[in-house]
Amino acid sequence: MNKPLRRVAIFCGILMLSLLIRDNWIQYVRADELTSRDENRRLRIERYAHERGDIIVDGKAVTGSVETDGSDFRYKRVWKNGPLWAPVTGYSSQAFDSSQLEKLEDGILTGNDDQLFFDRTLSMFTGDEKRGGNVVTTLNGAAQKAAFKGLGEKKGAVVALDPQSGAILALASTPSYDPSVFAGNSDEDSEARQRLLKDEDKPMLNRALRETYPPGSTFKVVTAAAALENGLYDDIDAKTDSPLPWTLPNTDVQLKNEGDLPCENASLRVALRVSCNTVFGKVSDDLGNEKMIEQAEKFGYNEEVFTPVRADASVYPEDNRPQNAMAGIGQASNRATPLQMAMVASAVANDGKLMQPYMVAERQAPNLDPVYTHEPEEIGRALSGENAQKVQQMMETVVNDGTGTNARIPGVTVGGKTGTAQHGLNNSEKPYAWFISYAKTDSGSPVAVAVVVEDGDANRDDISGGGLAAPIARDVMKAVIDSKK
Figure 1 (tube, helix red, strand yellow):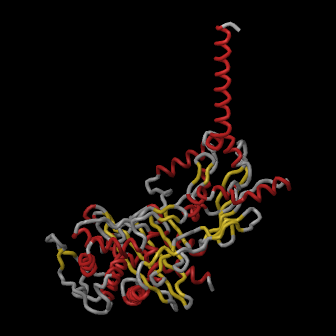
Figure 2: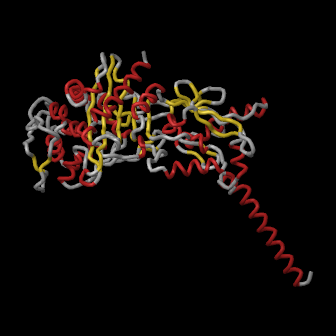
Figure 3: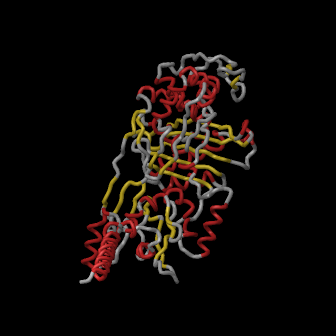
């Protein structure tokens, strides 16, 4: 072979080798990456080629699948009362992916999860059509309905927990939306989603998990726990060192109480019953920022919470003395999600033990056999059992003889704390109404609740945690108790 032909042959050989290497790289090394890319339409067609598994509440599906016309996506998702369950399930859309449980549990719901490998293999031999598995939630349908009914047309959120297990019993956010309206991939679906995204009331915002508010006086429960845990006070009925008036440290600003209250040197029980800013602001200052942060973090502050849906971190910040005093009464830079404040009430009700919140009780194969069952998990001790019981006594006084009487349930022991949190620069906006609470029966505490209400239509003077939020908490707690009878 002459020299020019040899060079051509070598060059062609290099090209063939490069092609083989590239082909093998694509087929084997990058196969999974390319298969899972959003641009791979075949994957999306396969996902919607069979009915999606369901999300279950109280043993019944709150979701479903229907056949579509004129699309290569055979099935699309539908909801039974979508606005009621959207804060729990999220959405699943042919055009816009999915969110929350619909996204996190997509492998089970589509039938593609490794936990369903045996079921998929068996269906290959039996010839059965591929089906998705189910996700069984911890939600209590009656409690969820009570939460939505109580919130009504107002903006706000409700979270109810089982203090003994951490199971989420209600998760409501208003205004809500119907995920069914953009579950397909038509122009109408796209337009419906755009309307929701442009809505100034933000119906697709999950206020229970993703909105943080100043918790107002409900945070005084945490400050009371900090006082007991750090030995600042040990007798909840003894006088505190709380002068009136009391000036914020390093300032000439007097901290005010709401009305003519018996706050001068008031005991912790009295101070929580009538919600003395001066007492708890001074407690926070006496303890200092570091100890207040430590106590807040024992209740779950300063970390994201996964339920498995992610909840934003609540924040108790590093701050100067006057700001720390204000944070101790739930103001300044103190910010909390409704889930976080439900965790506070839950830990107190559970004698100090804080459980990991969760909303997936079980995953099921298409034949309904369980492939996963959740085991409750303790996060840690928010406070000792002895001190938790002291805080319980204080919170029960709030409901029996204080600002939280609207949360009373006949024949049931209820503890709670109201909060009316300032909102806007110099408190220029209408405040937020808060209430946190728990109920106790002979078998312990089956439910703890946090409620926050943003009522833009109410008169400013009519907005209070006891007036707006406590009745909602009462109805949710009662729904849980009645469902266990």
